Image (tube, rainbow, N blue to C red; front, side, top):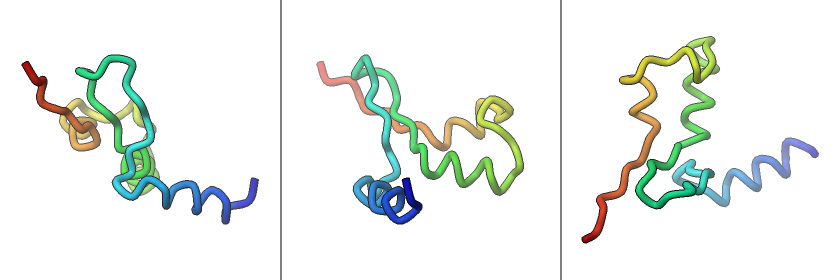
Length: 64
């Protein structure tokens, strides 16, 4: 797959959120931003602190 097609796919998710949670109460992950941050820092997602990882999670309020 060429980078052109990957970029086109990425453009379909302007907020950078790719994952679909199994449970609607679980946070979503901003994958594109997480990937870029890890590249810039030279680390893997597993090496991030909880505070660093939190910036890439989108939590929705639970509706009652």
